[in-house]
Image 1 (cartoon, rainbow, N blue to C red):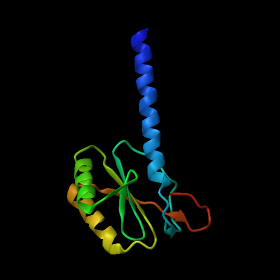
Image 2 (image 1 turned 30 degrees about the horizontal axis):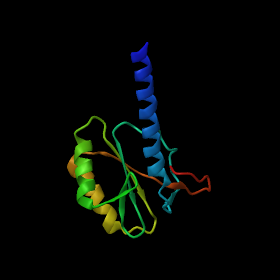
Image 3 (image 1 turned 90 degrees about the horizontal axis):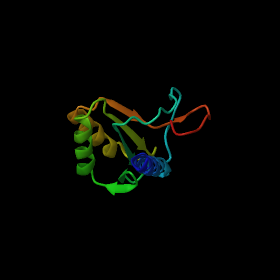
Image 4 (image 1 turned 135 degrees about the horizontal axis):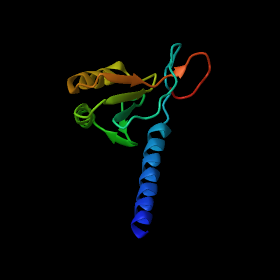
Length: 128
């Protein structure tokens, strides 16, 4: 019975830690662009990498400021896993010169599933 209790506590700890990482990614305030054909937000996949690009071009991963080389290495690591996905949360005022290298790094890493977080233009709101 004791091993079962140990496993249960480990699972609870894992899910608590995982939920905190998801909150950190979604909690970074950015003014997302709007789009008329925005699809509903999907559940996170196991091999999803989320990068937030602030209006000043600052890159954040899991709430930590990172440089472009770190993010490119993260994409390269994700590209070795099955079904990699990159989700970019870019502020509408972020310069494209900061976003383009991320797209190039995805292509070089073999990540073909790149999604942008946007708001629905019709006022539906929400992080899509």
